[in-house]
Length: 121
Image 1: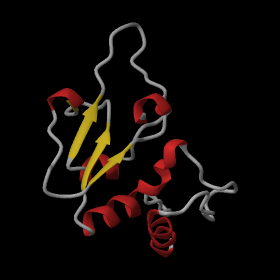
Image 2: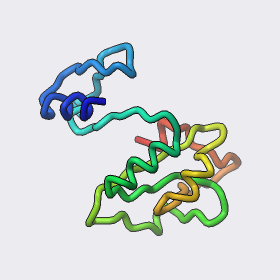
Image 3: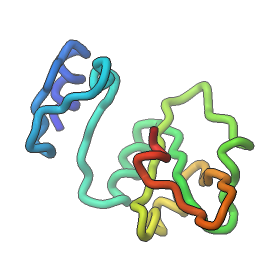
Image 4: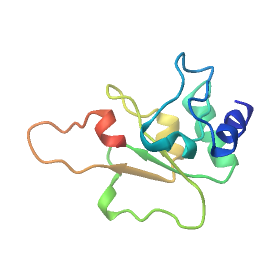
């Protein structure tokens, strides 16, 4: 996406227009300056693109083999991409197979579910 609109106009953009969103991108305290947005045709294209650019891909997952986020140490020597699946079906099998880490948020109570917006906050 034109290198995320030239990295949000060199991190000085306010209300930068992105074709994937109908409204201007706005967030509290200028956080949009630190985001790079891109659109991919599929989860496979997303993870393949991230991995080819040297990103460490960590995905949230409730399937067997995922580790608690509290037991995980993020990499310090490469960029990190966090992938969150949708609330209904989670991540794709391709993302599950190619992620460098699969993580879950330990929860107590009756429901093992965080709203996606709570998880990403």
